[in-house]
Amino acid sequence: MKTPFKVAAVEFNPEFMEFEKNIQGACAMAEEAAKNGAKLIVLPEAAISGYIYRDLEQFLPYMDTIPGKTTDALEKVASAYSCYIAIGIAEVDRDTGLTYNSGALIGPQGYIGKYRKNGLNPSDILWFVPGNTGYPVFETELGRITMIICYDDTYWEPARVAAVKGCDIIAYICSSDRVLPQLGAEAAGKHSTIAAVQHQCAWNGLAMVAADRNNAESNPTTGVTVTYGGSASIWQADGERIAHAPATDYSKTMTNKANIIYGSIDPARFDNDQKKTLARRRPNLYSDLAFYRAPTDGAATKSPSQVMARAVQYRIDVNDFDGNLNRCDTLIKTIQADAKQSNLVVLPAFSFCGPTSKENYLSLAEKLLGKSTQAASDFAARLKTHLVASFIEKEGDSYFHTAVLLGPDGKLIGHYRQTHLDPMHDFLTAGSDLPVFKTDIGKIGLLLSDDFRFPEASGVLALRRADLIAGPVNWSGQYGGKLQDAEGLFDHPCAANTMIFWYAAAKTAQAYTVVANSVGNGCIGSSGVFTINPIDSLEIPQVASIDQEEVVSLAFTTLGNAYWMNQDKLVGGRRADLAAPLVFPLQSTALEKWRAAPGFDVNAWAAYRQ
Image 1: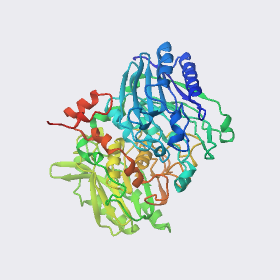
Image 2 (image 1 turned 90 degrees about the vertical axis):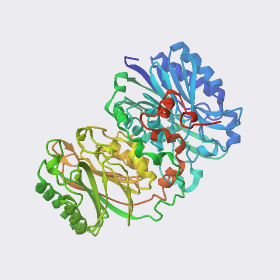
Image 3 (image 1 turned 30 degrees about the vertical axis):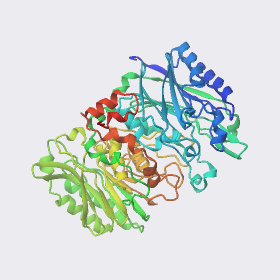
Image 4 (image 1 turned 135 degrees about the vertical axis):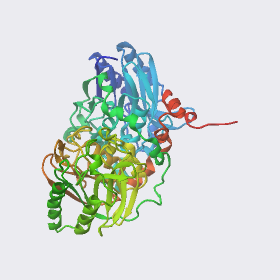
């Protein structure tokens, strides 16, 4: 498609144990959207069966095959109105007897293909087995479409793998509710995937149509009732949210009517700056992504730490080392005056040397143990804290953007060289590793500036079991944008200027992330401490202003052992086998073959000999 086309996210509410009636209802909603001109129509997860069954035996009579009765019925709508329909179906495979939480895509010519959910939540595992389709991408006249289902968005890989495969549009199929109460302690944490769906499109430059239910469902045989969140949304590929349904009104959920929201997707926006970063990926750094790490991973930190983290935000001027140092010192003194002991302090990028360009980097460059590291060492020792700063490092004939991690005694623990360089810094040399450093407050990973545009970077740090990520940045809004959360689903709304990539790195790596940016000279602050459970009132990210010199602070306990999700659970639940294409060299035959196939094809990356 060359011109904008209308899409629809359908908040369809199936009736419990009413298979045939739900097929009719789903067809009626799809037809209504099609009559209103929608060319892509997305319906919720398990849209024909309902969801909260007692066990697999109770669920089975309301499952369907794919293709099957549901796809047959929707084919008539898709054919009559020349549209595409994505719908969630609880699937039974008659040949194997296995059951899947699946999505089906139907077009004007009939059934196109399926996706079987990989990110299974604590409820899914009562009824479904892990998917075996990979993350397929289907060619259509609207663009290349992938399907992602609900809890899949706990992981960054599904959308990223699809993006690398050439995707343009995500059909996000969801029935997003709180964790089921019969799951015990896990149910205490608030969780709603539809509330935090933005990172899937934002990190990858993909358009998205996200559908959810907006009612409540009760199972009289178990006495369990769950309420779905509503909040369907539609996003342009360049990150603009163009339609958003309200969150569910919890006072009248049983009688909530189905709802359809519409938007116009512009294919011209499929070619955007964030999608172009795919060409700058560095698969040679990402090998950890293809390896499985068990929840019992010996590399993981065993004991939680009490941390007081602070991001220091101040103006950093060009070629003004002393002025930058003095402005930082003023804020360091405010931290010293605070009775609460700091454990981790992060300074903005180019902390003292100032912004770097092709014109001045030679004059700014220092040795690793030069004056920037010395100044950072002094601040760390004064505060008795771990401290992170950055500068331009010269080693031999190479120049790097380097971050240093100092210990509370002022000693250098380690350093990191930026691996994903900002385009404006192409005169620098990229680093060759994503290290994680063991400290007495946990394992700390470092990222710098443009690194945050690449979910693989924070993903590798998570698999190297970073408990904390420290990120000095120099950000003037040149990428990313503000978090657009689902109002009404967060216990505490995030700050309006919450930066989506920094927020998403913490959430998808399950590592507390401290990002420090400067103000003035085009930079727009928004430094913050970003948490691993941001939807819950216990985990409120703290974000600074866009223009004031200040320190933003947050106390927390690492590991998140009491939360519905933490890094142990994240690492144990991810599909390392399906992430393998992310580590293929950009020019490899394996990547080329895999990209040419719609879904998962093990032969694309495994050579077999007779």
